[in-house]
Image (cartoon, rainbow, N blue to C red):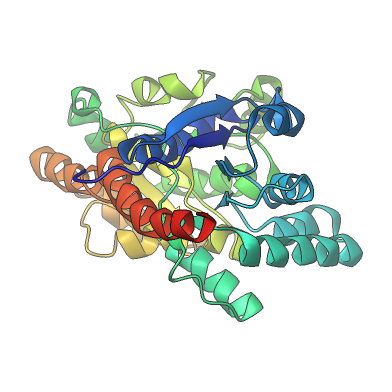
Length: 350
């Protein structure tokens, strides 16, 4: 950077699900460092109280939720950068079906969006959702950066066999919103038409998954369990990865890290087109397979009938990791925006 600010400290408040979020928050922290901030990290275990003890009210603080934002505002902090990981009121309503709780969360959310000095969205669909929902314009204080937790791994692109005798994968929990049951049914129909196809499931819920798979009617399946940082290695012989979701606002605005894990090692994603962030980003790509519903099996069978050209696939995915999923690209862009936004803030505070 040609110019560096000298306005003090930035603090990053981390999440309990650190294996998924640290990559994202670390990218934001690096952007602060690029323009001269001293950056400190506060773990989820240390929490708001520890942060409030150590940070000065003029410091910049990055928080990963509207609840954390509200807590810090009550303690007198104003220079707060808010990362919106998901649409919390809608997620809460899907879990609890409580309108009163949803209304309270929406009040907190709207106030946080208005008061934050900068906003981080995971997709353009998320930014549009909030702007339409609350009649606000965030164009002067926001940046869109998709969730990602890995770099591209060309060494793991493996052999052509993974696509010729197609190996499919499901990675994740068995939570209802991740649609494991629907994915099993989807794959069972694929297996009926491509008898050589197989399914690899990676989940921490081993007993429940084994029971479900045993009763599914699927013949060719394997079950495993690895930590998130080892997922790309475990997928090196997998050709296609499922990410099937129901069409609702929660999924529409999301950018699941699972997609970057698949793509990083040459796994072609079979994903629901309602995941609009990635759907829009991948429209011009050849080696992705969006599906419009849980019944769109014919499209997948046709798609996998022609194995990819591995050189073309690696080149196409490389372009994605040079832009959409590029850590260095986002650090540079964020640093430029922080420079413009926070230099004006520092003049106002002087």
